[in-house]
Picture (spheres, rainbow, N blue to C red):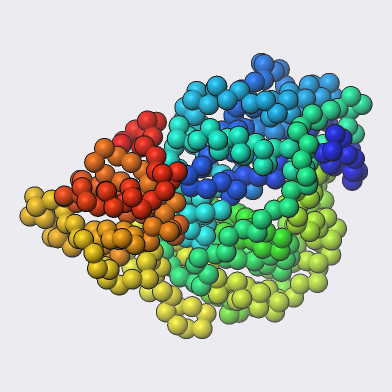
Length: 492
Ligand SMILES: [Zn+2]
């Protein structure tokens, strides 16, 4: 592995067969946005790429939770040309194209994480940082121009970039980015839901999220053993599912989240969620066998020593450098894995289970599960409150109340401190104005989004006589957080 510095940008490269692959990486992604500016990094990426002429070699760009990548594969002179064009574009973005690119963005969607992991991250962190993964935000056409400029200035400069190459840097390679100090990353916001609990959301299948150090090879083996057991039981034994997936999400140096999710045959959501939890419990209470560990070590060895994964190794090294994470090379990982005992796997996984969030599709109404210590696994909710606070109350329109018993339960309270509502199932949602991250302005309503993965629909379809409520909200929430409903949304 070689290190160079070109125009202030660290360049990491290794020699591999095949054409030259380049990844220009910036240490910013979805997690660096806010609800109000959601999608701004993706918009910057699109604006930069929109300046490229038609190129006859492979090239692409993407925004993940933590990184923005510009990639290309080709002859050295093509790589030189692509990188120079991207860097130049980033120093002088065609802001006049914002509107057009916003439309493209809306059509493309975000997808920085799979839907189950995205929901789990939102439950863990709320409507901020990595928790933004499940949200669409105000819409690409509501991203303020200032946010675009600010994002470029803060993140897209030489001090926040690394270039990964699968061959030596070509002689005339230039990275003409704006200069910038080496970025020190602000710590990710603390988790809002830290203790194990189960949650419902509109997701295709159940999933599990647990906190751990992503470099911890004991936890890596534990996650692989769990995936394998789920494949054996849920798929092969019961035939309820055909895919067990997993993600690793970087939170900060030494901090991460791992998720495991299963797709599910219709009608089997509850059964699969129970099997997922059961298998997780079993790994937290009983040691895996030595044979199971040997199997997973062997799988890791195959992957890590395959010459075809050399480009992944360069990219991972570059990402670790940008994010301030300790980098473990393949040999170190394998040496650490060789030392891991079955007792350590059980112990490490039991500790991680303290933080486990279980997510199930909305079809599952009730789950009676236990934590490893035998206590009941509680259902998660978005408000600590069990009843509405005092204040002006709003009720559904008379006709809705007459038609449905559920509507008779629904209430909205808007007072000087915040907004809360009770839904048809009697659960309380809401938050003080200090936790508002965005207010979508409709002609006769307001949708308030709160920091804790929760919203309050101050909507005339649901409540009548909202005039005073809207006046109170508009006076209490800063104008910068209010925006007209996106014109790109199919339903207003
Ligand atoms: Zn809520």
